[in-house]
Length: 213
Ligand code: ADP
Ligand code: AMP
Image (cartoon, rainbow, N blue to C red; front, side):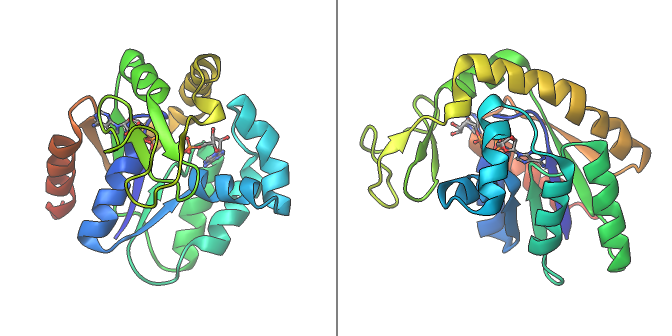
């Protein structure tokens, strides 16, 4: 099974991808997570990507497509979280899969209004050590500012500051939303009401993925 999670930043894609990968044994491939790790380690990719990420812009397609070509496994199920984000990336993914005699199983659209997105992103905190994701109101850690999993300190992402959030939403509308039409034409898109809470959303998601359509 190869599934794409599509939707605005902060809609809850990463949170659901982590739950789903544990439940169904799928590989969770998040381009955002891979890029942040590359930035942290100051790899050549990280050095090129950093300025785009800090501004809330998309990293150039050529870098992202090369990254996915390297990371996409030959076998086994995958959740693609945050990729593709442009029509060019979607086309490249289709070509990549067809050269391996595979195709996308489903695209899950996380649908959410801007107020919910801004509220989620401004309250998001991430572990500076292991990358675990929390929310100050909706998914708080047991001890304020401390990661439940590894004891690392929780920080706010630079791109989760309000002015960058607004810009990321504009970028989403302009560059990523056309993918809805792209996948509607292929009849593989399923819409989720992402305003629901984490557990309800997960049940709905499982229902969609278990349904053989
Ligand atoms: P994305 O991967 O789409 O950018 P995240 O999964 O990181 O989004 O979620 C963004 C923020 O919203 C995080 O702080 C997360 O804890 C919180 N969150 C995720 N899903 C929900 C939900 N269904 N209800 C409320 N808060 C959520
Ligand atoms: P995310 O963690 O998915 O919110 O991604 C954080 C940032 O990484 C984005 O704002 C982009 O700068 C970059 N990024 C992640 N995935 C992609 C992608 N598929 N294409 C271009 N840029 C990406």
